[in-house]
Length: 299
Image 1 (cartoon, rainbow, N blue to C red):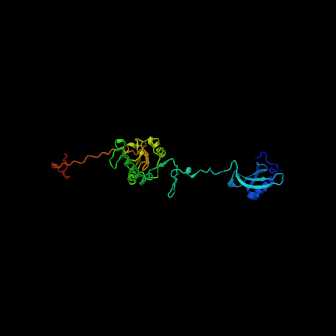
Image 2: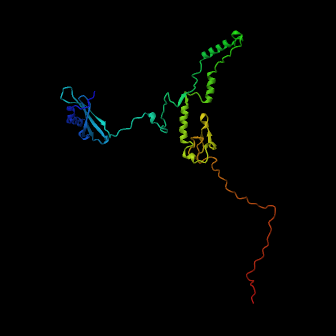
Image 3: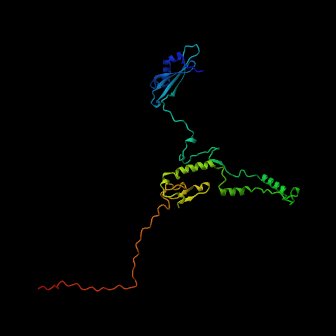
């Protein structure tokens, strides 16, 4: 059990602790004595200020001890420990929690956990029955319904419903490929909601751009529809002048580039010149101008 009162002999051995600390760290790095800490029975740690500029607020800790009924003090260790005002590195956070959207670069790999809540098992064909299982089901169906000899079922009743054998793996695989299956895992409902919330926050109806837009994307001609369950809430913007060009936008989003926001009228065109090609132009006779020699007579 740790003693609350420091051992007297170990606590008074400040000079011994200082000499050991200066020998380990150098005289230039050791400052004034800051106090003692009782680590246990006859175990005391002396604290000295650290004068290294790179370790502001750190302290040198030299631990002394002595044997029972002995007066000689011995040295345990000298280490550098952070003080109350020490500059420390931030608490370590796993990479999976530090990663933010946009941090990945070319060649980076982002592994997903096996129990990732955003994913759930998909159909890959591995769950399909084997050939032996298919034959066993077919034989069971034929025996139950008398499919081979056409006999009635037991008790003279009508034949039981024949259990059709399951389709082949190739047939199921072709249909699954058309539906987008064939992957080990697909998005779960949680993953869909998380993605929808993230996209809605970036390009949704509550953004400042959408609040000032004249209309929503649902009525815009630049909106490209998508497939899947999110098609009722999102689409892709195809307006090169929009801030969301090439992005997945909410149907409630909008911007000033709406296709029907401001249809600019055509400028007025002057009427074409009309030429009268059915009548000849009239010739106008002009009187000869008076000659300069003919001056008016004066009295």
